[in-house]
Length: 378
Image (cartoon, rainbow, N blue to C red; front, top):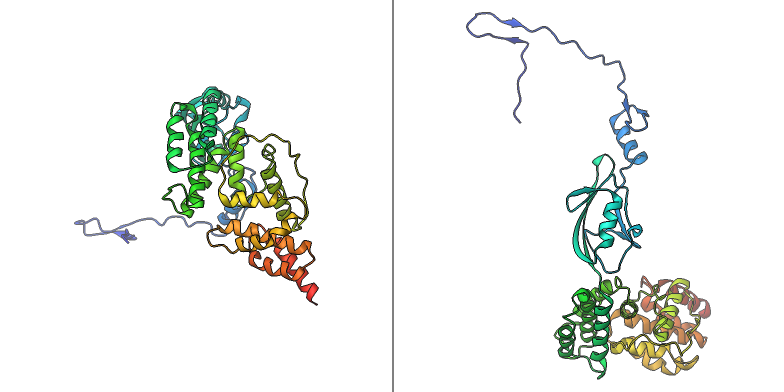
C-alpha cells in the first residue's frame, strides 16, 4: 500500500544544513472521549455504543405506500379497483414525488385516485432523506361493460361442458375488445390452462407442475379483481393449494364454501368436527369449470352425514394415486382419517395420519391422531 514517509528533519537540498520542524502538541490522552446521540443527546463512551443505540432507539422508518387494504411491498403494483384519495396513503414519508415531480401526499393520492388507467412512478423519501423507496403503479380498472363482456364469454366458453386449448384461445380472442379488462381475461385464461394441465387433457402441452404455476398466477391476478366470478375462481385455486382461510366471499358456491370451512376448522383446531352448511338454495355465481380432482373432493364433501364412509375405499385409493398432486392426496388422507376416527378406529386413523405428520397445514391434526392411536394400543 502506498504511504508517505514522515521525517523530523527536512534537507532543503543544496543549503548544506537541515531545518528542524517544531514538535506538534501531543493530544491529551487522559481526557475521555464522549459520543453523543444527535437525536436524544444521550452520551456514550464509545462510537460502537452510540451506533448501536442510534439504530435500536431511533431506527430509520422505511417509507411505505398503502393502497386500499394493501401495503405495497413490491416495486411494481397493479391497481384493479377504484380507490378514493383517502385510501391512498404514504406512510413515514417526508417527501413524495410523482413521475419525478415533488408533490404533497394529498396531491399524490388525488392524482392516483382520479386515474382509470395509466402508469405512475412514485418515489417516497423518509426522514432526513435516509431511506428512499420507488414504486411503479399501473392503474388497470376494468369498466363494468368490459368486465360483464368477459364474464359472458367465460360462461359461453363452458356451455358445451368441455374445455380445450382451442376454445380457451377463442375466449381470449372474443374478449380482446375488452381493453380495460385484459388482466381479468389473463387471470381466467391462466386458470383454464392450469386445470387442463392438472388433468392432462384438452390437448394441453403443459406439465402438471407448469399447470400449478398457471393456477398460482391466476390466483394472484384474480384476488386483485373485485368481481364475484374472480373471487370464486381464486377461491378454487386456494382450495387446490390447501389455503383454506379466505372463504368469506364464497357463499355463492355452497359446496366450495362448506369444504373450505371444514378444512380450515381442521387446520386450526386439529379436530375433525362438522361445520355448518349453507342452505342448498343459495344461488351459485356462475358455472365454473373444475379439474377432475377438485370436483371429486368437493363431491365427497357434499355427501350427507355418514355418506362419506361408503367411499372409504375410493378415498384411500385416491390418497395414493400418483397423478394426484400432493396437496390433493393430503386432503384425501385427512378425509380417510376422519372416516376411521368416526368409526372409533384410532389405530388406522393414526396410521393414515403418519403420512401427513410433517405437513405444514395438517400437522397438528396428525400429531393428535397419532397420540390417540398410541393411547388406544396401550
